[in-house]
Image (cartoon, rainbow, N blue to C red; front, side, top):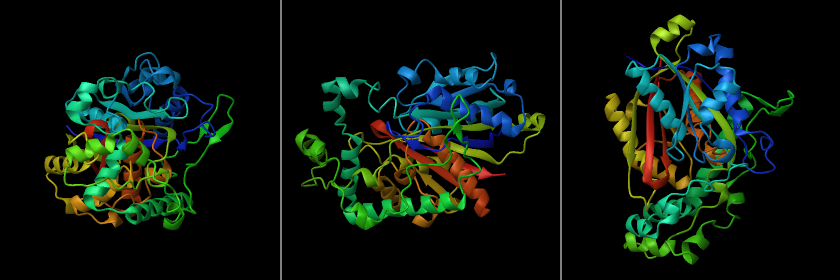
Length: 402
């Protein structure tokens, strides 16, 4: 059985700080906003859905206690639609989509809404993640894990990417995102967010800075040199990678993913569901994969995850028209371009998280929507979406237009 994508929606990405436009709302409101939109647009009864699956990285406080089920109830899905949460760090929403596809392909569900929600302005990163990476020194000595920013700098050091390289990539992300925003490329998937009184809170992504250039980024100081040097992580990576003399700290706020609030939802279903609901599928999910690499290097697993996904789909890299590679840091995408031998003209054509922001638990669903919108806009056929995650993992998905 095949799993089809019938629709994909997202909120605009809000600035993930107290001055962000979505900060006064709740994760429940954002999740309910995207869930409510799918049956409204599709004209089907929400009670026909088998499941809601949401990703969330910091599933604590306002984001805790099974936000998927809570958001479904708040969206008016009724008492009969269950929900559950998925947690794979930044890849959580993409894993939620992949889980939905697996359920449909196995005949264990006819229609599933998958996506995610994250409000970094309310629940900052690392507040509730905890785990042995934070509390267990023996575990850290075993795996030699590093903070993601230091890992991104390590990738740049090992690959020979200098400050000019990562800043040039970041400037291009802003320019592409600004062009896409101005031309309305995001409009099909965007759902404006209103508060309980009906007041419009945000209608477009608010982190994009069209004026960004490589020169303006060059004035910013590296963000991870202090933690690398003073907290001993540079020594850790030199122990693990003895071939380097020092870590070249090249990443900063301007060439790393922006802190953001947002939610996403993707409607995945069988052909029978679409026929009953009177919906036409927009794409099918051909294959999914996950992979893992060295937790010290942390962010290179999108390459093996993508290779595994292509192999499962029976495709070559040349068969993919567009790629969405989450811009956790500039070096992550530069590493992908080099090792997958893909041109930048096919990757993140509408910008990425460096410019648009990264509401971590929701981003994967957003990337699916962007890839699908761009395939249709360009009359192309296939796209690959991949994301690195904490502890050296990655998730990947290949979709094909119907």
